[in-house]
Length: 454
Image 1 (spheres, rainbow, N blue to C red):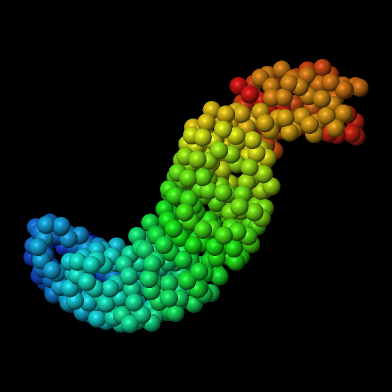
Image 2: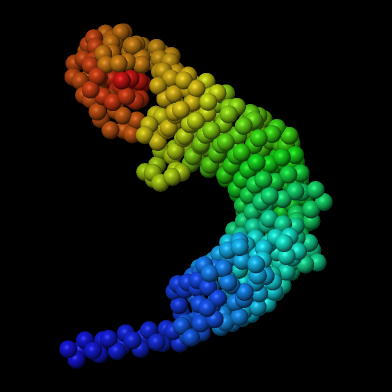
């Protein structure tokens, strides 16, 4: 009993010590009264992991009692009710120096974060409602570690100079590039070697060439862009991932496409209502090393831009998006005959998804096409295996003697063994898919491919 009391006392004093040193986990403040009582209820909490402020009573006016907070290491979430008539003062955050992330609207905020010098992810959303630029809320920012999201205009005179982390991301959303100083301001503050990812969404009249720091881009994500000049993409050499989604108009200039891109880790095209010229966009693409996805493209009619592209190699890693090929919900896609898909199915049939396209583009139709490619090669081996594809019984023509046969799935597992086979085989027990047939006669061996259909 004495030992239990001692342990309880130790835990109590440890908790008090943590509070004294300002280490707090999650704090939720639901109204102005909760904010006013902060120092009483959370004494010494200068370092908070997660701070959530909810305007449940529609009465928040200021954050004055939060002056002891110096660091927020996970996220600051401020949910102000749209019916709140107040312009809310930020002055209570006057000691805040570090902020990991905040996806908060500043539309009804006044004041600033005067000592905030380091942010991991800038996702504050300003508004013309208060006629302030984004960085007027952070006049002394010195370092932005991971990313910045820009939804309104920024100017050079009101944007402080800051450093960034080495894998920096820029998100530009809902902006018009006409007479915009955003590219100039960002280009003068971010090192080219640090800039790795660019996301443009709902952007109009934007000239990518004006963002003069794109040479080191690894990821380019373009979503619903209109009247934009992307011709500078021809000089990009380090891209690993390209995303093209929600293109509703064919009024963007892609120049000569991604001329210098020969290998990608990921390529995703989706929700495009207009037909993009993928042959022109990817004239020299040779391999996709991890994943390819094409979904919900209203005008996609074929995949011939993949004719000379090698699909991802097989690996044991099955977490998305490694070794995944997905072609789905493309209503006009009536031709999926592609060596790219055949090789993908051969390597990892359970990770290739082809469905809900035009009826001529299904996995069954692709397997039939793959079989015609295989049969051409099989004829050269001296033994003809038919029908290919097969629904169960296959015949072997051209044999001069009986053979031993082993059947492998595309992952290398043995799924059938036949000794002294001569005329036909029954493979009706096998699930549908692509198989490798190994024929052995003494020291001679040959390999054939066959597609089993249900």
